[in-house]
Image 1 (spheres, helix red, strand yellow):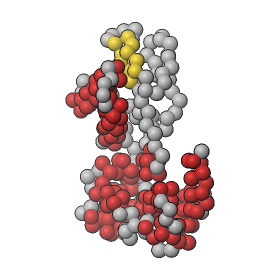
Image 2 (cartoon, one colour; image 1 turned 90 degrees about the vertical axis):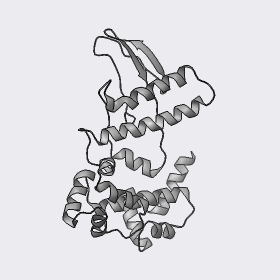
Image 3 (cartoon, one colour; image 1 turned 135 degrees about the horizontal axis):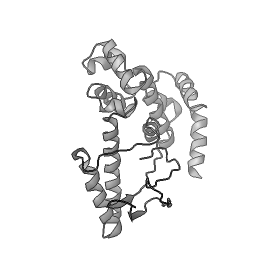
Image 4 (spheres, rainbow, N blue to C red; image 1 turned 30 degrees about the vertical axis):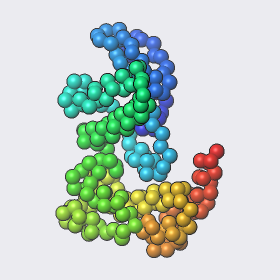
Length: 237
């Protein structure tokens, strides 16, 4: 999986010329040595701020290894279903492919977040049995006046133990993460609702519009009202 959608080339280890594939192509090919190679590709499109936040915390390439490994049996089953629905489509095939790709996306992220190559970030923290409780609470109610003590209590840890574990798993302090989630939710509200800036600020947990505007400008480079106008115009084009 290439979360950033970077240009790339996939080739056999031997002297085999690479061939270009359009997104969604299904290639059934034979390698120079060994059994046939099955190549499937697909793309995902995200337009909302929470999705951008998730992708921002992922590496440029996620690779899962272990053909035949019981832990990756879902990958083989999903791939077989994708081949069936794309090479021999019938009624509802488009919907089936969409749902299978959604499940694949989730499973790949799960496997990566719990594997040895995972790096600190939102997903790694969410998969942690302790830190994940706090992250779920923050995302469920970003406007709540969260404190380290309150989040530590939810996680059944002392303040210092929670702060250390959170920073290790997520890569940033709890307070900074809360602010990030609030601003991401604010950006989504600015784009998806006609709510005034002051109302958006209150919904995501800011006591004043001025404080919200300063925090938003620091992250997005401009005040929320200007960002809303410019981003809405760009999306409209």
